[in-house]
Structure formats: structure tokens, C-alpha cells
Length: 115
Image (tube, rainbow, N blue to C red; front, top):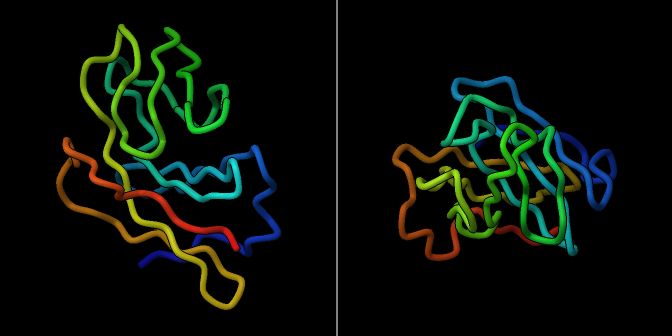
């Protein structure tokens, strides 16, 4: 588990990049927290710098879009999912659990409750 920030320091509709290896992006949207690998699988671009709309993040480079809940791409040019990571809040601090393998099935990993 990696501490990210205080929950109040990540406003609704915003993201935060963790400079880890690989980099991780944490998003707060629709009352939920999500964490994914921060690099687009189509080309090397930071997803935390993209456009967030609900549970979708659009890559700023070529407009590939990913579902934060599953990591799966929702349109071309991306074809591979980004890895998702479970998120939790404990005593007001946001935590990310780093996962080892890419979660192609994405059966709910990466979702956390912000409340």
C-alpha cells in the first residue's frame, strides 16, 4: 500500500500523478476513487494530464479513452488496457495498493469509495 494524499487534497473531478515505477494516476470522480497506470498503452503519454469525464479518461496525445473502472480502452487507437489498482481511504488518507500484473479482465479492481 502506498499513501497518496489526504482525501480533501484531491478534489472531485481531479487527478494526481504518483511518480513511481511505473507512474500511477489517481482520479476522484462521481464520488469514487480510481487508480490506473499513468501511461497510455497506445503511446507514451500521461493519462493524468488527459480529459476526465465521469469514469472515462481521454489521453491528451491521440484521444484514446479508458474506463477507470476496468482500465479497458473504449476507443481506438488504444487496444490494450491499462492496469488498475485498488484504492482505499483510511483515517482520511487515500491509499493505493499496487498490483503486479496487468488486469485484462478488470473485475472491479481499481474502484474505491471516497466516503
